[in-house]
Picture 1 (cartoon, one colour):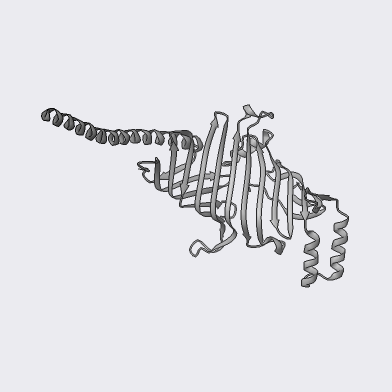
Picture 2: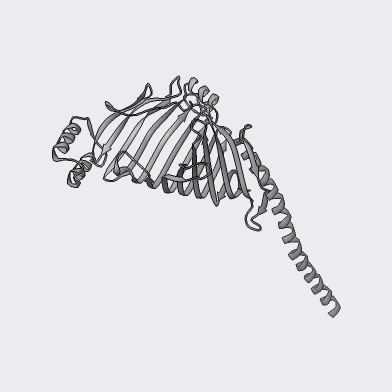
Length: 355
């Protein structure tokens, strides 16, 4: 009886030991297989977004996330591509890619930093876009629809003002947070029979280096809702010409700028003329214009007579109330024959996107 009990307990111990050995080993093997499968999915999604004319330089992919997550990390990723009549260099620091087995059509990407440098062949100017934190999620809904979510923190747009030997980067735009949502819909799912990219963007706490109006040096919030209609691949000139000739347009459904006490709203459509200059028309709603005039009178920037004349001019413009009952003035905005006009006033000359 004692021998039987001893044998029984020994078998139990062996079974428990085998379970504790086999389960972790099986889980480890399954994790390795799933991580390799995720690498295949990541490569598949990335290859579908990269163009043949782009040069990619990346450090070795390192598998990570065990035991509860699966991700692939590279310390450095660089993409060099032609861009219209210049070059674009995109650099990522410590970028990771992750795909879940429960949601294999979604690619999650995080990076400690992103640096985008635009080299303009027109005047050999250098522009740099950078962000300390970068997150993007690519969701493939089906064969005809995809969605991208971007979120960037501490965003800056800089231009090199110095020489190549003594570079001096001047900050033109800065923001705490930028969120972009892009919904790509193929021509098979649109009534226009043209592929469409619906873009929603929100940006907070914007600081501008210079502005025609002092009120726009600091902007509280910005919102943009637009649709790019047509298959626009904006990397090369030939792609842009094909998009224009095929009837491509950009529909600005709503653009809002909150620079209290003045606020702006705009809608309209934009395309390119034969010289590849912007052409289009829309409407701008201006809220708080009278408050700005009163502030300038009080500050001494505008005489009382000038202020009264400006207020009289505003009263002659069409006005509209929003849902909150706030009054705005309506001003048409046009881009035609290389000139941007706000009402009858010339704002600026428009240049071709190539020279």
